[in-house]
Amino acid sequence: MEQLPGLPEAAFAKADSSSDAEFYAFPRFVTHIDDAAIAAVTQAYRESMPPGGAILDLMSSWVSHLPEEIAYASVVGHGMNGEELAANPRLSRWFVQDLNIEPTLPLEDNAFEGTGLCVSVQYLQRPVEVFREVRRVLRPGAPFVVSFSNRCFPTKAVAIWQSLGGPDQQRLVSAYMRAAGFTRVTGKAVTPRHSDPLWVVIGAD
Image (tube, rainbow, N blue to C red; front, side, top):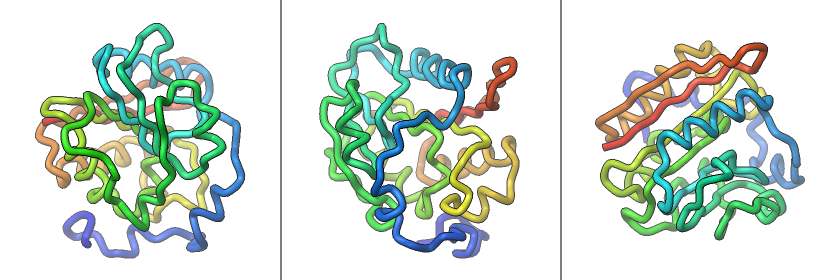
């Protein structure tokens, strides 16, 4: 499936075409952005995700960056490494799935009041298909919060991502959102002092 009109399939190729399952087979109990950037992600969630709601943490790991002081009805985690997900104390349940092979989420329609995707959008080779699935499982008006920095595993990030800088990457994610059917899309740059840069794009219907 063409992800965005005018973009060739090669735009979503990776330098390392080996199995993502193999790449993520060993757990990495690290954070990929610094503390100030993490705090900015948490603040974006605090402002967007409804307390007491059901939350989907897409492309998650051993930490979820959700505000500690807010309780949610449930937090469902998705990722590529079961050990990392099992170590995440915020998750009510979790599942492992390679979205580049199978973008269809094994989740019911309108099941969540919010979805977060933190510092992993650059690895999606079928982003519009995945974003459509996120829209399907969100309730009307619920936010999809995508955050990213300038860090990545370069051999696993798609080609178009690596050819762009932060503001253009933000526009690219916004284009994914609109192509997937989100009608309200907003973006902002968050640059804490002496910190990793952070961009946030929020989509909703």
